[in-house]
Length: 456
Image (cartoon, rainbow, N blue to C red; front, side, top):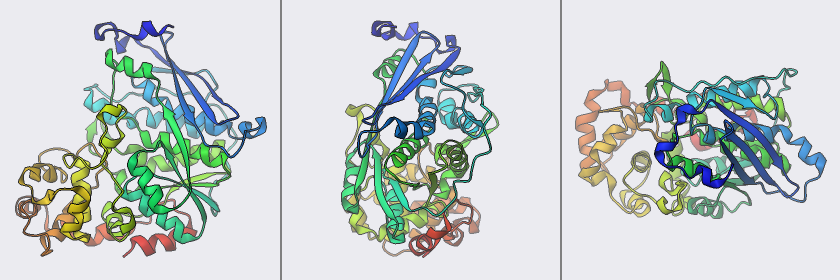
């Protein structure tokens, strides 16, 4: 294949003509450079590259030890290239995944592409059939963690996760893929060493997107989690502590009889499937979300007390655009994520302090009303963004409506007067929203710290 063969006009690329997505090869070199190779039929080849930080040149034995995690990263990261055509078949030319891994991939390449299918108007979810190799039953990966790696995304959630692990007294380092400004600022505010990985999407995928390939949201958290697991294993860490809350398990709408969830790869279901897959290929490392018992509103309450992070955090996803020309450096104040984070922080912060962070009085701007109302699914489905459940949005509105600091701001008055009456009176009760949930995989040794930071 030549690069010129992929510089096609939109009319020349037909996704429906592609029949098979191929996992072609993968390598990890002694310096931590990762090559992941894929193809669509025999016509389009791709190579994704990661650089994984390693403490020293890796021996052949060290690389062999993590081969299962390298394979897991290869299989999961392929979803970015598969979606260009979403063909019916896959070919695992480097060997078939074991059973739990195969089940994880089947979910990520179908429900993990639910939003992608919905936005592209596909008749249903992609449903490729992943083969599976026979393996012995996996050993349990559940044990007391000793050295913990905490991925950092630059938002409030990872800051709260950092402080829970710090309070536990366990040895920890931070981790990120890339070094966006909010990530760099969070790392500096935490004052904890960080292992920095990089990821390079094959530019030929970008070309193919411009030529008519299917494009859209992918389960990116699963990809980052697999990179974190590989980094942890190569640096002597036995656990990866994610910052995914219980609200991430709630979907947005329905397609093909299946709930479509923008945050599918952050959900508890995927966390459990990923844990099972890791137990098959690398039982010496475990992964769990330390925030899983809590709602977004509880996490916001905890974050409001962590003022060291307030000047540096950013949850607006427009800073993470693949195209650098489209990235922002801070809050855009005009997207669903900005509105949601502003809303759930407001009950726990002074108006002037929140304005200093965002640069605007978003709840006093009449033009923002419709966007805030949509967070309750009023007038449509819940936005395709990392936003919380309707119940916690309603609870935040109720708290603001009862708060003399906020209740007279124009958007708050309208939300209280026009949105809350559309729901049963108990729907906005903050009590159940603040209660911690017992459905999680947090190691028992960390539950006291979770309760101390999130339970009140």
